[in-house]
Length: 192
Image (cartoon, rainbow, N blue to C red):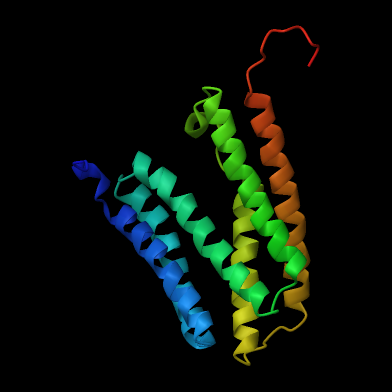
């Protein structure tokens, strides 16, 4: 299958780099190299900031990039949160909530797509969802820096943990409600 040339943009390549950094981050945890996990996660975060900026500045937005970018974010964050949970560095309940939310969203998007809804045109990340992703990233960075002994603001981590919890639950419910609103009525007259 021949790839379209316009998909090979700088932002898309940066997104692919972020996806490829996910197993590197996981391997760093497996080998107990928190310093390298932090560095890899930080570099992945830079690629996330750059790909969006460059897509706008260079006018290189593509459909592939619109699908890959949030996927890359989710894969990286979920893999990292899972590693932190396995190590006992974040509560298991947070890991379960983060992963469950993302599974429900992905499953819901697939289900809504089966009903013929153009998900890409109908559902866009909300400000709350972007804030949730940012909170998850900040939490991961705070946990990793604490494990390296760089505990600058020890009071901040519990606050970010609970802000992440609230945003994760809120945005999960928001996506479910938005998805349900997109399901076409079957016209059976059941009053729903």
